[in-house]
Length: 463
Image (cartoon, rainbow, N blue to C red):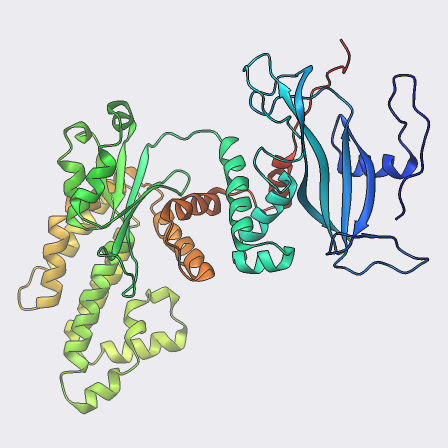
């Protein structure tokens, strides 16, 4: 692509748009701006002129020099500015690649005298935010890529540094957050997350507070004690606490005590997640299975080896062959068969349609687990009795508690993808984006990429 030929000026002193620059101007789509020049540039900064039909190599950069046609605007308040303070240096912004060639937008900015904010900032450009060296559409594209790829791979794909891609991703998420409606916390989920044995901090757990209506994390704090959750509750105003109707959590006593000991949360219902209730029932079954098969001699140990997940998995999720094997194992011990039946009955009770039906089912289960001779089921009995009001509240309110575990799955995906994350505020923002992002459909992807567009109002250049 050679330099543009010289052209005659129009009546108002502006050069007309040639066919080549007109096409490029329409492609870039910036109102009030035009392409003044486009040329290829080698990695060493020298201009490259293609010869004949030979195409330039992919490492050659396409530089598009922009020119303003409308009045300059302040980058701080957006007001049109008719007075210029001084000229500034020529700057470049990375843009989306074109035909395997990296693209840069070039423009010589000016500093304006803003009559509204009484400052002398740089003029606003429609393709990038202040202090950024990447265009908004490139940042949105990078944010779209990093939603499913590690940052290192995205940086290698676009020829950028890791920190540049990380900053661009943060800017794209910030635009997405700015245009979203603010949600009021009404149904709150509380859960803990193990950080791993190789974590260097003294706290090996973090507490995650989430919005059950959207599935987004609202707060992440180190530790899992009563003081950890109380530190978040103290940040809420009296009005915010009054709007909360329900807390859904596991059977960790510290979380329940933190909510019950807050005098401004006496009206709040506490609901236990059925996943964790079944987790305790499965632990009782697993301990009983070990006591029967692995402490009764080599013959019983060989019979029960490798059959753990047959007992923990729901009956209807087993294949016919697995159900046949499970029947044979349960026939070996009547105590284990009765305990397994109680466990499956508890699964159905937790899915009861209302609180009354759940209360009847829980009373029937507690009568079958109260015998002290069966130590493992007796432990389950005591645990269910101590948390019975919170379990029955599940049948009354029926919150979407499955989103608590879905958030844990997104956490695991992000941490494995990045091979560890230390900035938990960044992790919280990205978890919120993954939980409620619009990228699950073609229309959602288009709307996310459209956040890069900036509507420019036409202002005449002359008074």
